[in-house]
Length: 383
Image (cartoon, rainbow, N blue to C red; front, side):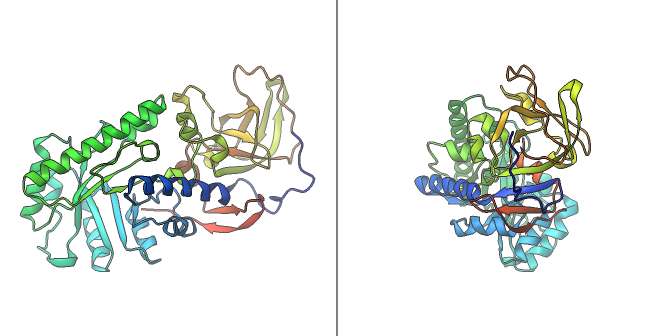
């Protein structure tokens, strides 16, 4: 690797989180085009970015409302003027008071449930009108995690429980998490149809039972980008598409040169007999996510790039300690000995999972199209 004579990132202490805003804008535009093709509303998941600067780009691109994973996210974005918010994790009793408080503050907060037990607890004070929570029922379309089966008797029981509490069934939502382990584009397309069909089936059963059920919400980044039919769906949710990552690249959902997020790291030492270069970005910077280990190409803890963001031949972060990253040739590589990079050299590492890696940092160092530092964008933490 040839180190640039002038390093545009020299002012930064490492590890630092770099965000290529040109790639990000390209990714947002790609998703906008897909939603326009299907004629559905887009409600992006902001758990990935946790940043108003990024979320504003999504709103400017036509997003209608946002999806969050924590009530802290709902608070943060509502304080910045976004009030149409779906909290897409089943509400638990210890968060009910918090959710109701947000609702009373004028936030259009929608929550989800997948049990009669929780449905019966959502309106303890018998609230009426706009103080009541809006509620969606979570549907399990693939056995990935929570939710009720579309054909289960529990679906109608939950709806009846909501009605008994003076709450309307606002609709259904589902997430095809198993799309992240698909092995081909054809499998993703099939998963997208499975996701759509399950949500539409559930909505149809609810309507037949007398529940209005206006919202049919689906989404994951793979299925959102590869769905061929969204008939019966009213909105789509996705989040990681804004940055993409190596897992998405391994699925064929994006190209490596569309990944907008990278970690800037500095060489701090060598183990020459092992072919190792040691850097100051370990798993505290990259996260412990090893999602590509289940794919056909294992990318270790991340793909190593030069300062311009171009991958270096068969160099990956093969191992990581808390504050140390180990750079070496990919196992089985025929590229020859790894280069000996001088101490002080800097590299960029593409992450396995953008959400997990971004969560390790308090801010993004935003880059313009010429890969120059263009500003610092703050992130936030917490539940």
